[in-house]
Image 1 (cartoon, rainbow over the protein chains, first blue to last red):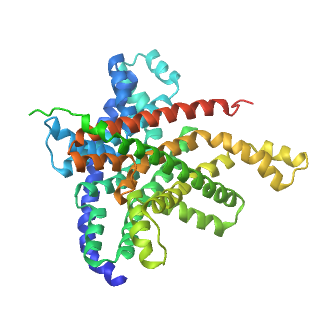
Image 2 (image 1 turned 180 degrees about the vertical axis):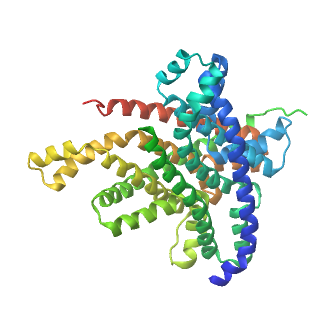
Image 3 (image 1 turned 90 degrees about the vertical axis):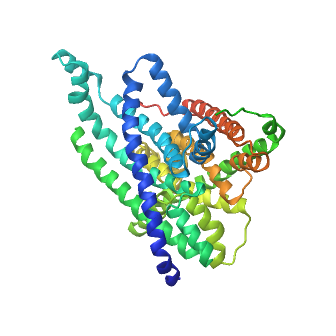
Length: 216
Length: 223
């Protein structure tokens, strides 16, 4: 059993790199897009608000796996051509963006109205109120669920294996295809994913506990 | 470039999607039921248990929550029968996996529900002479169900979406139905368009239904 694990490790490390890359791309692109669209959902004009709400609700209602296939097979039909890696990243990013939009909305809406009214009263402009009153406070409500959500991105990235992208999940299956020793490799793979995600969720919990002190 | 949509083959094979949707719902409901049983038992044990039992339950919860579902599905279907002498078909294997996965989430839901019950209610139960078991059955569990209902319905909808992963071990649910149509007719865009719409409509019908139920059983917040 140990032999199989040691034999597999170099392959798995290559796969792990792709898993990390997919997760990082997903998380960082969706953070930017989610922040912009999240603000559009709260402060934008009505058509933009409706569009963002529709986007978020639709994307979140589709299973990630279906979304991945949809982007991979569907986008080339409308003329957007990309390889499996970018199709996977696009699909995961769309899903994550919708989640980030909701985190942003939740965080900003948790700030009492009085805060922004006070900003108005002392003559701050809209963008000043955002950057020096709302956002610094909303950040505390945003960070813990967002970091916790990164674990979803890492878990979701395992689905890219179905498009033939050699991530950790795909590397595991490839090694099993050669050695026929399924159990040790799945356990090892589960352990690697666990270590990454458990560290992230522990970080999120710690942060939440620390930031909740500030709230008082 | 142009691509002209042609849904006729999708409608001709619609039974694959329709039957798939029914199976998806069935998988979600059964897994939810077993998951509730696991979650309920472990949550009650957790809040009244000692250090060691709490630790054991926490290990279960963290292990399953931090691993991709697709890996667990493979592990149970391909890995487990290699080391223990059990045999099961793909559907049974998937239900087992999703149930244990759901259980890990529901322990947390029920545990926080149990811990959110105001101490006064439990004290009141004690004051009128209820035994610990009666307090659990008549005071804590009913209150907990009300508190956890929103999280419970969210879990149900997540599970419904997670059933799409059963397609990787060829369980003939909705996503597999779309793949079947693709393999046999190459009308992949149409197949996924229809399947996606079916997931969306079913998901939102469930969501609105469950929100109505929640409103009916809402906790009186400022009582």
